Length: 107
Image 1 (cartoon, helix red, strand yellow):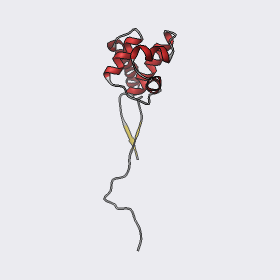
Image 2: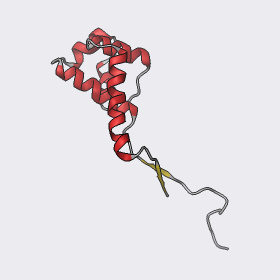
Image 3: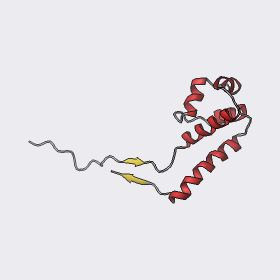
Image 4: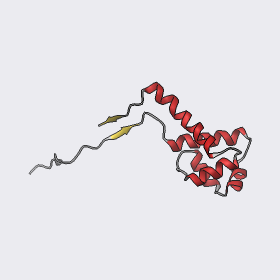
């Protein structure tokens, strides 16, 4: 009796990342804005009403914040949600143009 994998089950695929995730770019943009203003995490979170741990996780691209949290953070950093998301969208556009916008799957 041999043990063989079932041939009817799909092979596992993993996505080859060809572009950064939205949450990573949002985090980078927020961190840049905070540092440009010379702000500490503590000062920003106090104005935005979120925890320092949560903002830290957002800045590192670990957490994906809601639009309400993004608006609060943008306001705390002296910008708008529109300006913040436009800056993030610009970061997405540049690499996509150079790649041709393709997604590749690897087995």
